[in-house]
Image (cartoon, rainbow, N blue to C red; front, side):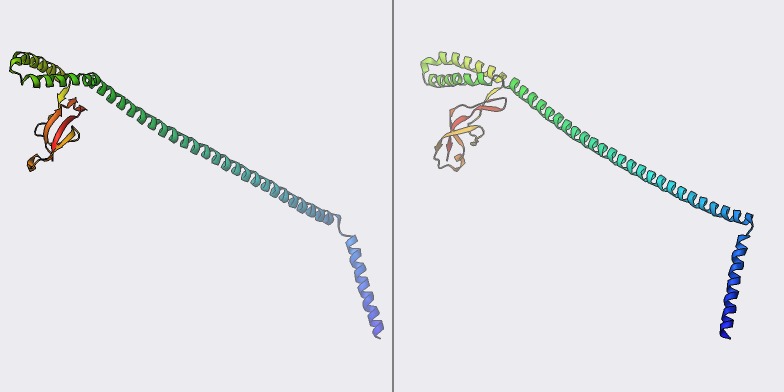
Length: 227
């Protein structure tokens, strides 16, 4: 009994399968065409979407590359600009230094020129100083001889006239009488002991007259100083 039932079920399944296959063979042509059209359309749409995606990706890549190139170009231009600015700063600093150096040189040259004009006769006047010393010694010796009074008067006139001319050219004596000893103007050649406290450090005697030319010492006065 069970075998018969099993055979009937198998037969039923077989008939159902055959009927389904038979039905598929007789599907209307339009339905098949529509199905193929839909499948083709889907395939085309899929391919179009892929093409669009590829184009978008390529465009994005090109834009990214272009942006990278623009950034690199901007960085290069900025670097060149920075180098140019640095060069300008260095040149400006160099120019200002040279201008300052030239200005200092000009001032120094003008000062030296002015001093040369002012003290141009310094060497000539220095060579005349021994003559003045001889005049002073001659006057001092003649003052001791009463018979040379007339000659002394003539020599004093010449000496005073000579001194006046030298003063007009900027020469002047360094004062020593009653002055405190000053190394800027005096040269101590002797120290004289003294009990008078007020004379200590004072100039007691001038052995050789000192001279200045336009406030510049050209010969220190040689003096004896109390101690």
